[in-house]
Length: 502
Image 1 (cartoon, rainbow, N blue to C red):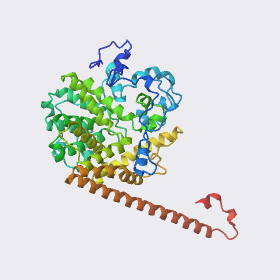
Image 2 (tube, one colour; image 1 turned 135 degrees about the vertical axis):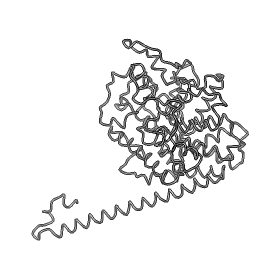
Image 3 (cartoon, rainbow, N blue to C red; image 1 turned 90 degrees about the vertical axis):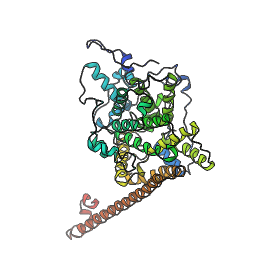
Image 4 (cartoon, one colour; image 1 turned 180 degrees about the vertical axis):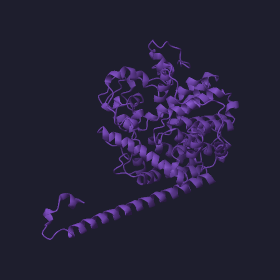
């Protein structure tokens, strides 16, 4: 598979060849490639990934609400088909800023076939380069120094109460770049794997750019938070004495790229709008597959591992995909059952490479959903951000008369009830098993924070309920007083309708 690392210089009066755009920051999918190729159309009729749940299993039902993989598209695989659904004509990457805009015309579809293999940020960046337009925000240079506050914070990067929001401010919105670069240096990965410093920095800059800053939750700050949590887990005694240098490099890169180019909507939304990504990945781990392939595209574009033997580089890409695909919430019960079985049978042997890889998968799953286990001040912010992203998706679904996804309707859901449900059915079972595997101070701290946070959300829910009841009682009293103060000669039928409703 060819990957173009540099864009050729083109005269401004000539059209840009499609093969240049199609290879800018993305993988060129080939039907002959078994690893990164496009799915064989003959196999696409066999829809995979369906999970059957027992309706009595509340945990499974809650997970299914978060990412139902059994939703099916009404059509087969037709990559060149123009969808009849109007929402497909809207770029989902900018849906939060274009709610008031109309639909794009179908005439732009041929161009979109090329552009949609790229992330939105990559496409804009390549367009600026091709058109000779300078970027509004310059790329970071290698010798740019951290501020004093950021340096002080990085000295405590292994503390569980690390405030990633504050660190992001100190680094001027570059928390993912600076944190990941610092951790790779701290572990000695640059020297050990002979990584080119310029290529590494360029890779991290491109990774951060490909996260959508307009997403309330799935953005570069979330990726930095997951990377910091992954570092904390890899510092635990059980892992620190067992992980190889390759495992550490793999774990940090997977954490940094695990939600790369996330559109801010979930998998069921992409499926029911018949989005091309859902078709490409056959409705199975759609977002996770896209994150993985996007990460591999950046690795190849920057040539970060180009000095490695081809077999080693491909192995890194495969292992990276295995970790990122494990973050699919719809497969939570599969991984949790396997983890529990290993612990019950005491069959985990971390000298075994496949067992270490499985523990890295579980560590990344924990890091991805560790927000309920953070101190309340941090956990509350994350809870509000992820819920707002849910609600924004629900607003779009209402606007375009789509069925509103579970947990996405702001009129019937609240931050508190969503978080309590998530902790009860998803987070608590996972972190309880992790504490069995690694019974350390950190594990007990995480469980303690989660209990306190759950109680805090419960208290807020009660306060909101009492406030609502008091408001209703006050309104009812006001209505009765207004009716009593009405003139004697005025019957109830003569009271205006609006007054009775108030």
